[in-house]
Structure formats: C-alpha cells, structure tokens
Image (cartoon, rainbow, N blue to C red; front, side, top):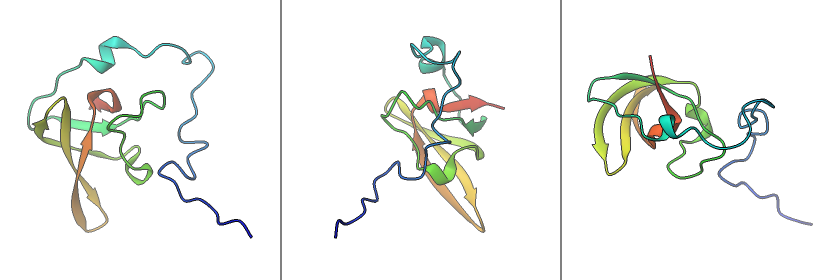
Length: 96
C-alpha cells in the first residue's frame, strides 16, 4: 500500500483557487505594502506566492500586527481560546 502524503497544502484545493480574472502576475502594490504595529489585518492568502504563507487554518482570520520580522510581519490571531502568533509576508495580509 502507498502511504498518503500529508503536506503543508493538503486540503486547500478550494482555499487556494484564484478566480479567472485574478490569474497572472502578482500585484506589486500588495507585495510592498507597509503595516504599523497595532494595525488590524485579515489573513488573505495569495496562492501564487509561497514564501511566508500561513497555515490553512488561519486563512480568513483577523488579527493585530505585533512586530516586524525581516520583510514579514508577526500577527497575533485568536484560535479558539488561545492567541497564536503567525509569521506572514505582507502579500498575504490585508488591512481592515
């Protein structure tokens, strides 16, 4: 028997799908956007850019930017009763 793989993007066929008019080059404006500490953001994943992509559980969640780490940002997100820190590239974030 073959062992089923459980990769990082398993179960994301619909979550990482782009609409037909959104396909193509990545928006440079989204990639270069800046956030301040304390900004409220939504994790809006860009499927074409794989670096610093958050785990699928956090797609669509909202949180607060708590620090900048290199080119990426650390976002504090509530996951049930706990708060977790997610490292995301700015292309995967959108201001509220």
